[in-house]
Length: 176
Image (cartoon, rainbow, N blue to C red):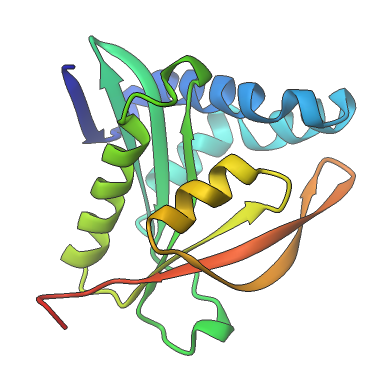
């Protein structure tokens, strides 16, 4: 497997947009109302929005390419700290998605290794995220990585208010 994970540059926006949109649709289309999906995709998965996120110095995207095909990605946000973490040394893992046909090949594991590596390199105490309570596969994946539920919040997919678990993982820096 010739997997390459790299930080996304602005000239890769079309590649990122394609894998981001497709992986989101594949993950959630069967459990959600088509109108809510369309609304959310239109507002959050468009070139202008993605360009703003890529230009934001407080966020980084990483893309996984296998044989020159984008198969997954994740986003880290460096300025989103939850008050219940009781620290400002935290990074939010905002998105970690794979195209469905690539799940189970170890690519998600490699993306998580990279997210943790970036977190450690930034000498940050916690990596945290929000995950839809109905996404049992994702919850199990995060739990295998040592993430623990610490709270919940409402996430709006279009007009649909969905309950998310907030999960955190303490990051050991230099054996601490």
